[in-house]
Amino acid sequence: MNKPLFLLNKLMIILALPIILVSLVGFNNKTQAQTEEKRAACVLVDFDGRIRASGPCDVKITKSNTGVEFDIEWDGSIRTQFSMREFPTDGTYSVEISNGGRASMKVEKEGSVFILRSSSGFRGRVIFPENSN
Image (cartoon, rainbow, N blue to C red; front, side):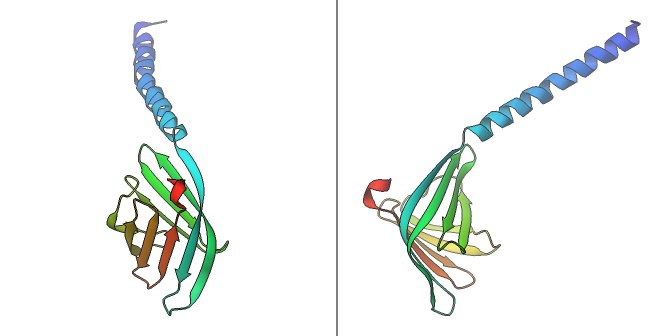
């Protein structure tokens, strides 16, 4: 093997190693996500005041290194998804919801009650059982 090809081969190996390492670290971060499904009592009120969903709902909470993702399935056909940097404590937050709008979210009772009010007019309440946190 002549010297220029040998150096080119070494250079390719040196450049490929960091790419391989970064891809492995990125894959490892994705695999560390923990998903938890919770049942909650939910009410969803439309912008015109009609109740769209009321009763038990499924809430999927995925925690990863990048934050927390919420997926609320109100009645089997209506979903609301949003993400935050960390699980919210009591207070008021502004979140971007899955349909492209924004919502104000008030969290009460040590993170067991979420009250959502969207910019498009819907209102939702999610109440987790006391022992679910």
